[in-house]
Amino acid sequence: MAGMTAPLLGLQKKSLREQALSALRTAITSGELAPGRHLVETELSEMLQISRGTLREALRQLEQEGLLSAGPRGRLSVRHLDEKEIRDIFAVRAALESLAARTLCELPDRAHAIESLHKTIDLMEAAQDASLEERIESDMEFHRTLCHLTGNETLLHSWQSLEGSIRMSIMFGGLEKGVKNMSVDRHRDIVAAIETGDASLARKTIRAHMDTAADNLVA
Amino acid sequence: MAGMTAPLLGLQKKSLREQALSALRTAITSGELAPGRHLVETELSEMLQISRGTLREALRQLEQEGLLSAGPRGRLSVRHLDEKEIRDIFAVRAALESLAARTLCELPDRAHAIESLHKTIDLMEAAQDASLEERIESDMEFHRTLCHLTGNETLLHSWQSLEGSIRMSIMFGGLEKGVKNMSVDRHRDIVAAIETGDASLARKTIRAHMDTAADNLVA
DNA sequence: TAACAACCGAGTGTAAACAGTCGACTTACA
DNA sequence: TGTAAGTCGACTGTTTACACTCGGTTGTTA
Image 1: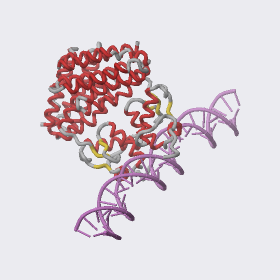
Image 2: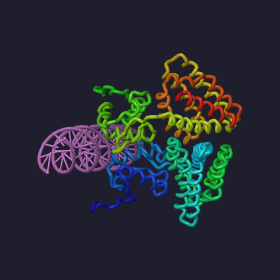
Image 3: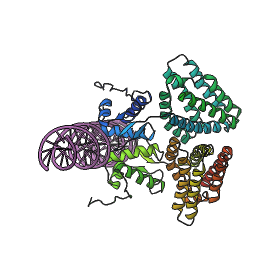
Image 4: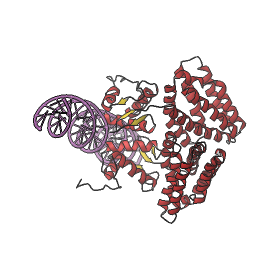
């Protein structure tokens, strides 16, 4: 372990593949790897100090997540989002989170879930004066928790597959615009709607939240 | 090209990785690779006559699609679905296809879309006396088209990521039960609802269709 | 100078070899 | 006989080497 120097983009977790995966995901969603940029396997493998084979496994996963787009000869590039695509992404996101809200509404014992959600909002509130990145992070945490609490693994998985695209949308639209959607009040509204058990109301609240979020981003 | 014999599971398309991908997907969703079965990379690579590296890229993709589940030491096995998971999968599916229906409803010029959908239903009708597999295929084609016609690439992509799980659900519940959901009338109802432009009605129709489908499968 | 052919470099597709790890089985010892 | 140490085999994790294809460049010839 002595000679282990951290390669270019901060790795630290489990297998090299997983480390590369999160490093690349971060690099893309942070804009460090700009949209449209061509990815060259040999370059990346050298940057990350891993072999091409290992890298390629990570790239396949990122491709599946929609962060990369494949060109002619298997050439990969960072996906570029236009306004329509951002709206489309948020439309799918709204559909998934609406399902989450509806599912939670139908949960007979949802006190614990409500509590968990309030807790994540408290964290958002505490992060209100923190960096843009941290505020975005706490917002994503809330929405991920929303899906997680349903106990629907497929829903959570689908949402997480979209998470990278969501982050790209925020990056693309501008972090300043992105955080405008993250008012504590709006999130408390969502939880309140779930608390009433009114699935229709919860769905409308989520949809409204997502529509304005997309609007703000592409404005 | 002379010595090229088709390996165990029918390959034929583009890169070896893609060939392996669809071959494995078919093998899993057809039950040829039974749920819970442990996958050994060396075995599979020999079966498919490809190298482990290439195979692993395909496996990562299947893992992301939810067809494989990862055990302790990176051990992969074919995912096993219980009744709750099937219901969960169909709940997500319903959310996605509801969005599709709603999107089509809001399309000012949806005549072409309606026509395309009717055409796929005609194919379903024509396949009514064909094998179970073919009937399922034509049904999937309808629902994929539904998502495709929205022009929302993210929606289509999310649906396709779920497609494998849907097929597994049908396989798991039994093909006979699966085709019970594929009545031509129910599908015409969906299209009719879209044709009226009543998003709420379309959504309800889809949800009802999916709920009964899930009910039938786990019954 | 225009057209064409041979060449070369960049980059992906694919295969084969090497390394580490965990579990099972065996063996030695009290 | 029970238990602990040691060994072996089966896998996955990872790297290195090789093959192929395409696009551009250079050089040759009419």
